[in-house]
Image (cartoon, rainbow, N blue to C red; front, side):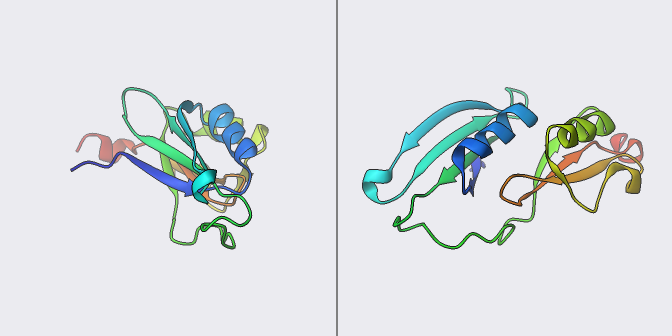
Length: 135
């Protein structure tokens, strides 16, 4: 058994695609439209071959079985991305419009920071601290 992907519900597919592709450099690899089954549209994104991980964005139209009130973070704590340079990545995300969260790299000796995606989900950017890298 292996984890293939994590799917998150988004309220505006175009806006979320822009966030994840332009700010976090994910690439669209698949797309499906299940609106005829009273579901929604999904887009699978992938970072690179190194991690093999995917993120699926799911959008549901009004009247869909899955069209329920959206509560950011309900059941989803955060999505983690490993990066080479926390300060550079954090600055880039903020410059491109990501919203900062209370934990930034200055509070964690430079190894982790958080921002919010357009739907309020926490995105964690992470670098293994030197003290743990040798373990």
